[in-house]
Image 1 (tube, rainbow, N blue to C red):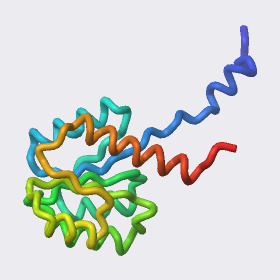
Image 2: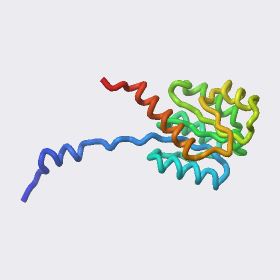
Image 3: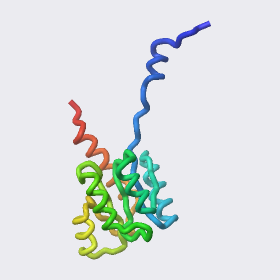
Image 4: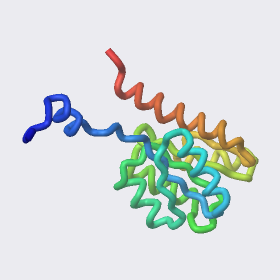
Length: 149
């Protein structure tokens, strides 16, 4: 009868699984939210879904979120106000925010950037290109903040 696990078994029990990056997804449309969530999960990313501005602020400031993906026209969230509120709590260098919009005008893009968005995507958007941009942002930030020696 063996009372203790072998040394390699103990090590395996104490190792922490690697945390996957998490995207806060703010999209009111159920179909689009499902599409974006699925594409992000296919990239190996975790997803927190929110459509209410109070929950968005809580998730952005208290959950360990690596990136925010927000629909500019989300009917439940005032995008620019929410962007500004997030930026008051979390610096741009610590939490990238990507904004999606069907409004293609430069005025909307300039307003979103002034409020604190990092990248602006005009819909329709290729979800795989969007997923690649998100993945590049998250992993490039991680590499920049934790350089390999």
